[in-house]
Length: 94
Image (tube, rainbow, N blue to C red; front, side, top):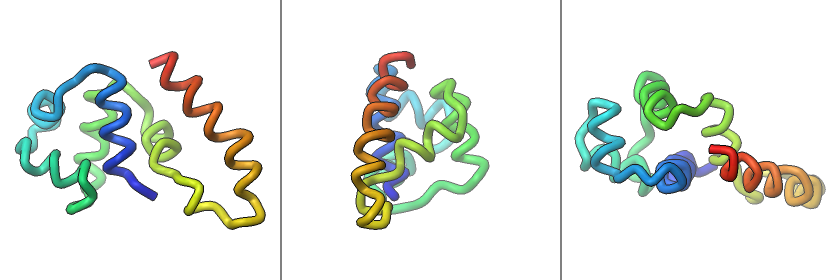
């Protein structure tokens, strides 16, 4: 699970700079950089602010944070079949 990478992907999809997102979430740019790089993990309140700033439900953020490595090996084909196309479709709709 890589929450930081999910935030970065969704932020870039919305053409929002890291600094702008940090300002919208009332945290420092350095804190946002640490979150996106996986050096720190945001608290629930910060996750809520990030989702509000990106105008997405928390479930989107959680879905985008999943990777194939998080899925049991015998279910990975199902993950590739369902989740990856779903992520791509959601990105188009954002």
